[in-house]
Length: 416
Image (cartoon, rainbow, N blue to C red; front, side, top):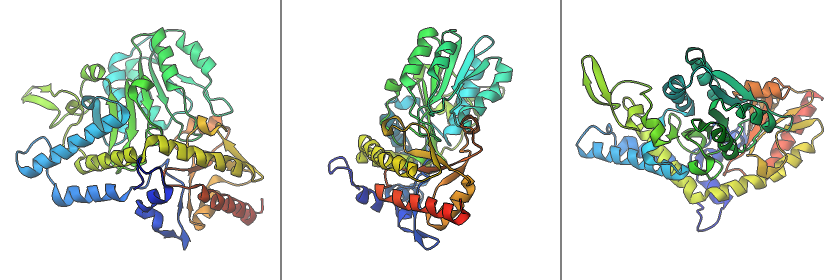
């Protein structure tokens, strides 16, 4: 693959991803749905196969060679992930996805630490995974839910945010670092600092599902007490996610699930719990998936996250004007490529997003059509759905033309 020593080479990157070399409906595949899930490089696929063919064993239990190998690979992945996001490995909890990570925080922190008089503040921009878990525990915990509106340009209404924060009642801020719909990169560090200045007891939960795969990430710089993200959106396997948290906060939280591994001792009518992160990893964990995520993190590190970011900015610099040049197309979100990620949502006058997605698929172009698990944001945009083209490190500027040509062909097909 192309690493930091040789410079970022999209052609070399593309050679590492087997899925990119197939056809769909007799057309070369143009994959523009990485915001939903990314393709996996061969090294990740090989790592998964190797885990099952050579290192099958449970972790943290056996004393035989295979068990020690599996444990070493599992814990090496934890360290690699921690280094990737500037976290302490002891604060990296493996979950099955980012959604489970949010639910863990909701049940083991928000439900325990927030109550009447407190505000849990999120935004109108959030994925459902950063909305519903808080809503589930709110009735029992008794805290108040508040939301920061989204402006017409796809950015947060920071004036309203400041008004809510000035009350000093915000005890938890849950905010996405990058929107999965309009691509907006939010000022998470500044928002978190404002909340903590008004209430030193407040914690900041950052949704990094879209940002961690695409931006250099450091938890300390973000000011995040918790950072949640998924492996499958960052070249890793499905079935594994990450909750990276502050050790002192995690250490004070009760377990989320009970069973094996998360205990130090068990008696017939009671138990003592393990230290973090193992307290939150009940039962047999995602062993092969963790190894695969470790391989994905090393792959992205070798590619260079600064280079990945620069490459995606270049794509967006070409994609947004090209889409704007098509009559009837409206692109949502910031127009400045440096203020946004590479997920681009758009609507076409007279066409339903599902129709666009279906016709584009016949041309070999994979996009997402729908509400993108962010219904409040879609409603704020005044839409029922959008079409989303999302780019990643293996996409190229040259793939913009087929996308635009296919949109024009869709307009011609439906005579709009």
